[in-house]
Image (cartoon, rainbow, N blue to C red; front, side, top):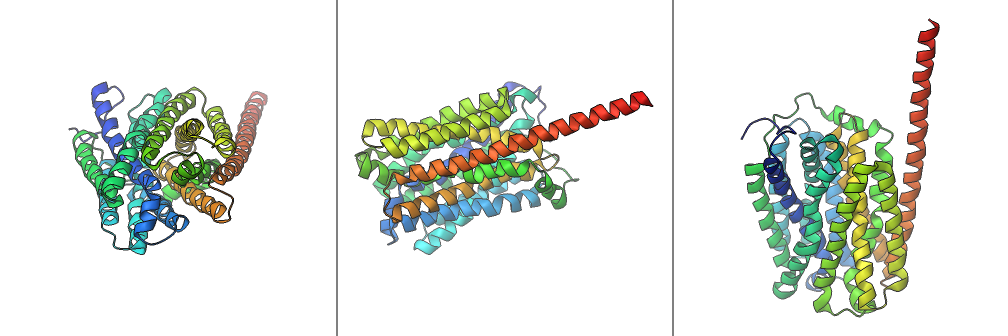
Length: 412
């Protein structure tokens, strides 16, 4: 394989093979991240803590992503993306194998934190590779195809891992994820184009992304506005069994419904983002709020639960748009910006799981997480609204400055 990045004119089959290899990594990461949510009661029983306390396992993984994404992105910016992907997936495999053999609760929390470290940087670098192989007007769809691995994980990987976890013990689920991670290493080695890295990249240049005004609202939307999905989904199993009357054996089917919603959201959100980026983000946030309110008020039987779970998964539509927007506004510091979206998204994971657990522990009921999600969604929409206003004012200021320069040149 050439040492150069594949050009846009490269055969579609070669580009597709690279996207599939990257998507398999997303599949492994998605399975590892979400499978625990369907096995939380079993984990809690095995390590002798309550279900809300076991939510710390989810939060630890999310905090690993939050810490790892910016740190790894800054340090790895100048290195070849091909090599970075190999190292990140190897580290993810080790974290999951460690989770599978963790002897107690605190060791498991530490192992999940380790597994979370490479998550954001992997997706950020994978998104940059995919976008670099795509035509300019198809970048969001290219990113969406890589993210499809994550969404397919919720349709197939998570339910299958949950089924094995219920049948053979929750540790089996993490062992499976570790195996998928090693498979990704092989596929990336074979199919992802080699690159020479960027010797001009420095930690200071990457950190320059944080000086871009429009980077922060997008991160806020991820960190706060997307927290509702995790507030609901972190405790979806007891909500299904205790409120909607779904049998425990049918929980994997419900997790598949959630995955189907994520796939649909990813497809629709990617196409909307390529059509019109900012409106696509606003539409997705509004849909999320609607889904959380519906969950809170209507989670009364298994059939309605199917619709609710599908809609909650569909809220993933916001991700391709936010990822693309971050890459657009970050200037030359795209590695850090692309990784930070996943760091922020998993901060939402930690925030949502924590607030949802507080609501449940306060006696508000399993479906109160929907109300928590709606509040977080409204906060995310407020951040989006401010971002749009700032963007419009900035463009008007630039237009006025150009007009003044032209007028001055004519007078001269």
